[in-house]
Every structure is written in C-alpha cells, then in structure tokens.
Image (cartoon, rainbow, N blue to C red; front, side, top):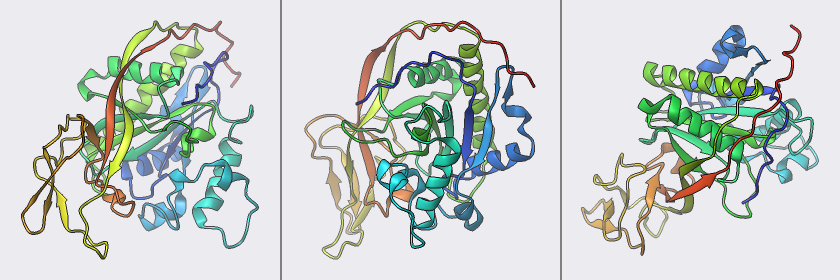
Length: 319
C-alpha cells in the first residue's frame, strides 16, 4: 500500500461527485440539486464544486453505458491515445481527469467526495484507498464521532501493489460515501437525507482543517479486501444457487468456517470452506453479478493513525 502525504496547505479545491454510477440515485439527485443551488457546499474557506460524473448513464438510469466509470481512472486509460472507438466511459474519464486532475499532478483538486448507493445491506460505509491515507482516516474518524448513530464503517478497497482506479484517485485525496440498501434506480428519502448530512459533515471537517484545527492520533478499525467469492455455477456458467438466507443482509458480520453461504436451486447448502473468519461485504450486490462476485471477503484491521497536525490558518479567499 502506498502512503499519501498529509496536506500542508488548506484545501481550496474540493469536488463532490454524484452519478459516477448512473442508477445510484442519492448521488445523482444531490449533484443535480447542488448544480442548481450550490449554497450547501459553501464554507468560509472554500466552496466545493458539484459534478454529475456520468451524465450519459444517468440519463439512461444505468450503472454505465460501455464500462464501469469507477474502474477507469488508471494511468493506462487516462494516458492512452484517444480514438473515436473508445468506450464512452473512457472518454468521460479523460474529461474528468482534465477537470479534476490531472491525476498525480500538482494541479489536481485537493479532495473529492464521491457518492454511491449499494443494493447490499452496507449501512453507512466510508470507502478509502488504504490505511496509510492519514487525512482520509482522520476524516472517517471525524464522521464516526460526529455521526455515531449512523455506525459508519470504513472499507479499504486498494490491495497491495494495485493502482487506485476510482474517480476519487484523480484528486490529491478523497473518499467515497456508500449508503445502502437502496435498489438501483430508486430514490429513498432516508438515504438521501443521510448522504446529504454526511457530505455536510465532511465539508465541515475540511473547514476545521483549513482553519488550523489539530486532530490527535487514534486507534482505527477498518475492513480490508482479502478476496472475492462467486456464486455456485453450472458448467455453462449459469447460476446454480443464491446467497444463503443465513448470510443475506449480514454485511460486516463475522463469517466462520463451516457456515452456510449459498443455497443451491436443488436446496443444498454450500458451506464456507475458508480456514479463518472473514467479514463479508457487498453481499448479493446487484451490480456485481456481472463481475462474478457474490460477496467480497474482508479482514478486520485495527491500526494506529498518527496525529494530523494543525496548519497556520490562511486568509479566506476573496469572494
């Protein structure tokens, strides 16, 4: 895992992206709202920029048009020679890279908040690249303290040696907000309001940081990817069963060897054959059927996060 440097200057260029997946409606409608009425995103030291990330997929109410946009922000896609035959999301990723990046450059935005919904029972989940991202870990910890009623959990998606591929990786730093369960193409008032409150709390944290607040070291808990598990399948690749009722909706709960994970269409239980306890997440996520993923295995980590030192407050930008 790589380590991102701790910011040494106030964060002025912040973006809130919604609709990276065009059928995840909380982010879609919050982005649309803020594009018309951006007042919620203003703070004394900065004003966040709302972005509707995938307008074509949003218009079609689909996750994507040609390929998953949130897997397309890699150096390979962003730097390849453009072609008229490029998938729509590759072209859009390059546009967003120019708007919010370029990735890994000094000109990139300071921070991106990317808004997502999941059909899985993930509750309120904060997604960061890795545990060495000190600023993101402090932001997550702040949300956990400020919003304890939401039981915010932290999910670390990047594996050792893997390049960050999500839209937030275009900026110098960022996190994703993942709220569920919510069906694709459906807007729920409770999750919409929860996401709006979380964005406000994130921006408030950045404002505190910009104004010179120091944040002490703490012990963190997070869930890191250790593997994926596919559904049982026939020789032709069709589904041969589904997630077991005893596993369904139990995201972040311990899964021990010998516990049932699938039920075949013939009524037989398929047991977890791993050698250690894991913590499944994104259980039965609708968008992952095409990826051959019934759930993601994670390990539960506890680690120390160093203090986030204070900055000398800089003057607020002139309106």
